[in-house]
Image (cartoon, rainbow, N blue to C red; front, side, top):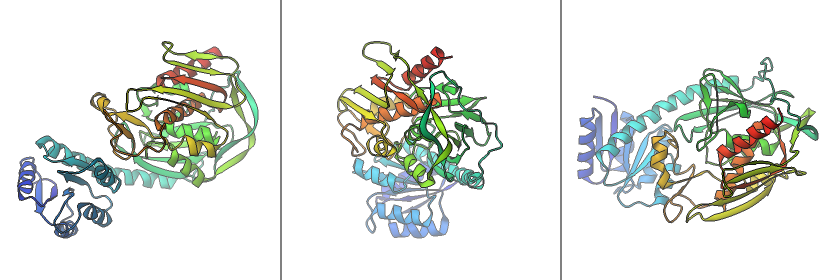
Length: 433
């Protein structure tokens, strides 16, 4: 027989049906109607996957989930319910459930659920090995590396602000939003005049954070070199831009962790590491004229001269999002942390099928994005009434840091995305090369 699966449900018919499906697929099964007995069976047999009902006669399913996770933080649990709500599903995922399914459960849901949970459990072992490797190297500054800074453009001017790095290294891990895989990341300080650099793991391919390395802009910004890629860099770069971090090495396994879908946890990690002013002043890209991209009057992105850096964005989607606009001036990291960083990435239920076919959003969970249905947001409470447009500003701040330096200029955007942001950077690069 194959891997052992524990099924916990108070309906004998469900136990028989699920057990039959899994046995036919080559899995061994254990069945119980009791939450308490489920915990005892888990202690004794350590099943690879657990299917757990929300409603049990002797113990609440969510309480049982919590107890299982305390027994084994790597427990792969698929929650089941015949009359649950979106809030129940969100709570279960936040408590550590691998997945949440509604009854009646189809044959494919059972088979896909156990296969996904087994991959998740396997990835945890890989992740633990990765993080151990990151921990061993996180205090090394890699000063011996030849990290060439971003190209010098005529728009560069010396600033009164110092160059900045971090005082100590920090390790983060989580899911990749589009790959769906567990991923680990370490950020390490670098000396002055180094710039922002990525390094892939385990291949150790060096990719500078510069627009010339952008390979894809569909739903996220991807950097690539020599066949190695790092996906979804914009949220981290947004926080680095806002905090004025100019020299940093980012070691990452495939994709930057999505965390809660915003930049807030990146801000917290930077603050935990400590921002360190360095001995030399930083250079800034001072915009000298109006740069424009856009394929129509509706979709337009401009960057023009200003005394500071600001972004104004107008967004328009069908209800329930509607039309939103917001203007943000990057006056301080604290203002960014309060107004922009908490805004989460979002997606529409109507787009999920297409994104799945493209191999995207595999890591989209109920707790790391805003999921928009036909009539309302279905998985969370908004942090701001205009959270959608604020996240668009977050993305622009991140993408524009791929010119390699902090920017002094005013951005005005209407209905644009990553592709337009990168096109704007390439226009600026070409005009000043």
